[in-house]
Image (cartoon, rainbow, N blue to C red):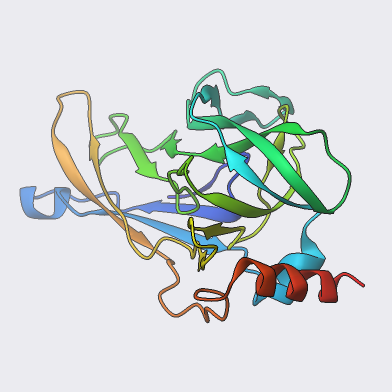
Length: 227
């Protein structure tokens, strides 16, 4: 079975396959394979040019949760059958590098994803929830340079590609938040029997030419690309 899911704030296409038709116990425990097709920006130049807005600022700590899975017939509405946890964080803009925004905006990050419509070998529904490949836990003590777009489905701004964030520590040293390299998950059926979920498609060789630079060096480079 192959399935594609409409999810906001993802920056990756999600393809899910599950082996079906198995009969013996060993094959019945065959893993579910989940594959991501990440939408990558190849370097800082591409990040700067592709983003609708580029903002420097700080995350707040009080996020609210929303359903990142959307209604396929009307993406402006959340799905009624699937719940993927999205987290909407307050973000105080210190400087707008590209685009015009308010001083206080919300940034929507997808925390995890529920996959609906998968059945086990006996035709029973499977509960599958996997970590989002694009999520990172914001640190309110750090300053971030974010590359975002207006969220097409919910209030605030979201991501359209990876990487999309650069963190700066107290000394102003940069760290590129690169895509997650791996993740593990479990699926369960109505009898609470567990099975492994294998997640594929993570990027393990993204060329990081940003980390270690100063905040002034990074901002000068981004501004140079936007001239």
